[in-house]
Amino acid sequence: MFDYNLSAPTVYLTATDARFFEALWRNATISEQNTCAALQRLNHARVTYNTYPLSAQTIHTADVCWTLQQQGLPTDLGLAPLLASQAGIEPAQTDVQTNSPATWMRLTPVHWAAARDHVNLHELDGDSMDVSDWRHIAQTVTPWLNELGWEVFVLAHQAYIRIASNFDYRAPSLTLAQSDILERFLPQGADLKTWQTLLTELQMLLHSHPVNAARAQRGAPPINSFWLDQTAQAAQFSTELWTQTVLTEPKIQRIDYEVSLAQLAQQLHPIAEQLRIGKKAVLNVLTDQPNACVHQFEFMPASLWQKLTAQFSGHSNAPEPFSWLFPILDEVHV
Image (cartoon, rainbow, N blue to C red):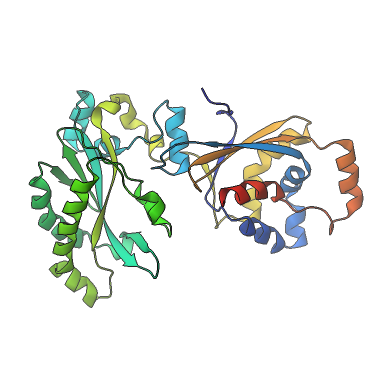
């Protein structure tokens, strides 16, 4: 079904700027660099790679797309019925058990902030979201949603919506929507206009809401909009998926801007170890830009000529680790 190796070790690269890896190496001491033999070995290997899109219409981060694909599920499948079921919402559980055509969606309060040439979307959580604030906001907007025949199930920081029939609306997950390139992740679907009209009315309610007046007094960002995502029909899921939180919390190693050189070397050590014993090694690297993609690297042990060149080139002239990542990152940013 797929041209790439699904069983190969896989990492999720959330830091997609080559300068990050270069700086990580350059800022390390010589002693620290010398302890990272795995990175040196990967750098001196012969490497080829291919890039494959995970989804034609990205609504999830690459790690979620990857996990859905491994389960044989569409990578653009919304997860609201599953998330609502796992949150203990009984109507969602019943809908999944009975293969109901009912549509489920997730509604999250957010803060829209206008920049000079774009709009940023921010999820309100932690210190920026008081549970009682959200409860009062939810009480205000729920009747407006009910007028459309939508059932609303309010949780501590979000709500789930049930519609008895199909609702043709697709939006990227809130995780993706929170970016400086929101225009690339706009909702779509035949019923989009229905939601846009309702959202405009809800935003007018939020503008003058007493909760936001109180939030302004204490310096908290206003709850001035909502993000609706994870749309799917309950019939698209099986009851067996309830306990598989791996679908919503993929167990894939992440490489981000907080990783240290030692941690990175540890994460890539199994790949380098294959090379050390003279075997081919394959690594899948997941990225989110420009869309959810898997970049499959194939490492081959260095040839004798490459080893001799590396041995006599000296430390200062040796290529730096991560240079094999540069091509995909350059391509990703096109």
